[in-house]
Image 1: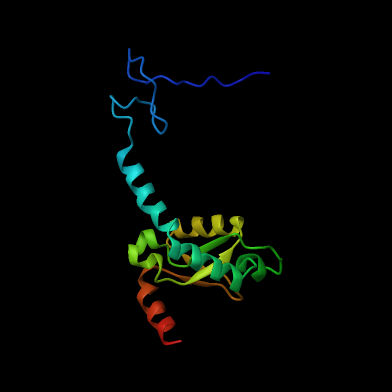
Image 2: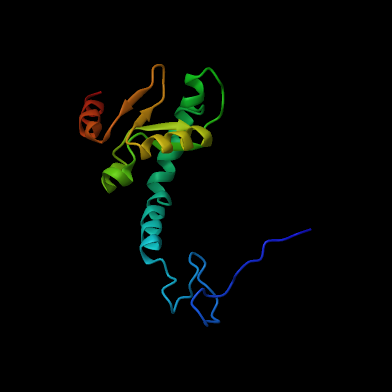
Amino acid sequence: MPFVPRYKLCAELGCKNPRHLKSTLCIQHGGKANNFRKNEQNKGSLYHSAQWHSLRVIQLTREPLCAGCKSRGKIESATVVDHIFPWMQISKEAFFFNIFQSLCIHCHNYKTQLERKGTYRRFGTPHIDYNRSDYMMVMMENERI
C-alpha cells in the first residue's frame, strides 16, 4: 500500500533539526508560531473553566436538541453550545455575557461559515440574523426579559 512521506526535518537549507509540530521550521529557525499558540491558549483557557462547564451543562439540559435541525423539522441531538455573537470578534466579556443556542456539529460549522461573512444567526422559525453592531442592543433587551 502506498504511503505519503512525512518530512520531519526543518525546511531551512542544510538544517538537520526536527521541525516544530505547527511549522515547517525547527525552533531555532522560527518554528514556534508564537501568536497562534498564545491565541489558542487564551481561547482554550476559557473553554476549560468551571464556569463554562456548568453553563454548557445547563444549556444542553435546557435545549438538548439542535436548534438548526429543529428549525428544518429534523430531530438531532445537540453537542455544541454556540455563542450567538462570536466572542472572539466582539470582546472577551462576550464569552459569558452572550446568548447561547444548542447546535449539532454540522449546524455549528454552517453558522461559523456565516460568521466569517459577518452574519450571526440565531436559528429558529424564522431565523434571526444579526451583525456586530446589534450586540449591545440585543444584550440590553435580553437583560430586561
